[in-house]
Length: 247
Length: 322
Ligand SMILES: Cc1cc2nc3c(=O)[nH]c(=O)nc-3n(C[C@H](O)[C@H](O)[C@H](O)COP(=O)(O)OP(=O)(O)OC[C@H]3O[C@@H](n4cnc5c(N)ncnc54)[C@H](O)[C@@H]3O)c2cc1C
Ligand SMILES: Nc1ncnc2c1ncn2[C@@H]1O[C@H](COP(=O)(O)O)[C@@H](O)[C@H]1O
Image (cartoon, rainbow over all chains, first blue to last red; front, side, top):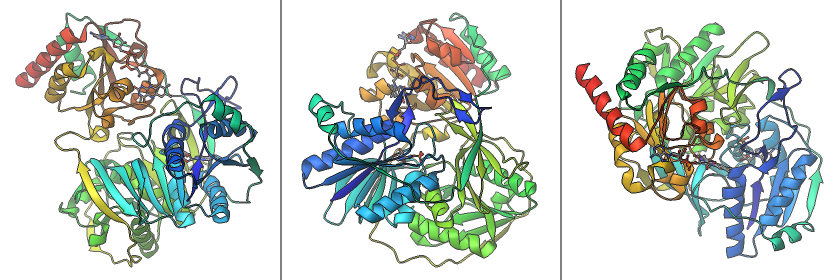
């Protein structure tokens, strides 16, 4: 079994969000980078569990991005995984990123590819579906449970109004969310071991971008809270009914 | 240029979200001097003629039973075939688990630029630019779609476009679907009797301030009089006080109801990331310094166990009067 986990680098969840260069670029100054939580807590940990169950499993990690992804990949290697690849392309276009990962998949012939449900900066939730279409693999997004079976895999996913369990063949691309696994913290042995694990840097394929971000904006600040006294709950009801018109 | 809107169906019924995506698609059709068509995939027990109310001139249906389950590759083939038959160039989806399974693959197949999480009509001044939410609702990005064919996934409850009713022409359309794969649905677990969080117009949410699962009665009573969906903060989900699917925030469900009422939630930045697109936020917290008040429209500083039952009673009174 050969598994690939897609790791994206995102700003820490408490980062100050601001933009520079005439609002065309995210202000990275002072930002601490983390592994996108869905990729770390769910996709990577579930893949590590599969490798623990079957040590013959080969577990690779990939990030498409610049050199600042390397510490993120090292941290992921410290949690688990055999080798990491960084494809040296910086792009906000999911298709351009998916094409890079597809090229790696074709070369390495992965049976399973895990992604996060979405990157907490792009909020696209698009990469896995694109990759599955390109690599001609089954696609199951928003997965909350994953098991290997004789036929391939059995996966539970969120759907409108509940959950469904799907059985399908592999190769498959699975986008992972809460429920898949429990968050882990890297231990000292993992951290030391990660230093010597291979981290390959690959130059990207030439691909066209289908989209480009032209500008960012911050939301207009809130007008400020209207406080109502705890003894006058009826006033809150009146405001919600007459002023906000939401009840 | 013609616009194709993928109807939002659940259990063979049209969802409320269709009003928003169809009126959005019809408004884009006007911008580009084209027509708006709706595609209904699979069987549908509702009257498709109703879709004209929101501005759909044509309604196409592929009534193939194979489409009753969401299999991405079948859906992608069906939509691609319809796009070719009616020469559609702008495809609209509503943001939900089905579109998440289908739209990205369609984008890759057609090499059509995708904007996922759109929240406004496109700007056509410099190319075709669509605004979307990024950084978990903490910012917006304008995304230029560079390709002739374009795909947009619209966030629910984000645009409010007046409808223009038209007479719609309904027709069936045939597509050839690929041989079915080994993929099959082996179990379905529906959440019964609850309002799905992402569709609820009002959401009442509880945090650690409720102290324990046994205290949820006050919250559920309020939710009941408001016909609201119920949500919770992450620690509440993690402690199994409430089911996981109620956890909202950066790492949970992201919602945008008309009204979000937070009870005993401090308003950590990761929590806000899941609820900051709500139109109106009400916070009830005993700590006047709770960060949530900064993100709220209305607030009460007080003990939720005293305030909430009074609030429930006052709303009941309002309903009785109105
Ligand atoms: C990477 C990351 C991702 C995260 N993702 C999420 C997420 O998706 N969603 C999420 O919610 N959190 C998330 N968190 C956790 C988040 O940082 C907070 O810890 C969490 O939201 C706090 O939950 P809470 O408000 O219920 O509890 P607390 O912070 O403990 O707040 C309880 C509040 O209740 C009030 N209170 C107590 N008693 C009463 C009373 N009787 N009446 C009225 N008020 C009362 C208190 O004043 C307090 O403000 C994440 C954290 C990290 C690091
Ligand atoms: N640049 C990238 N490199 C590697 N994986 C990525 C990259 N961008 C996104 N992903 C993966 O795709 C998932 C969904 O990302 P997105 O479509 O951007 O929301 C993420 O959770 C990652 O697993």
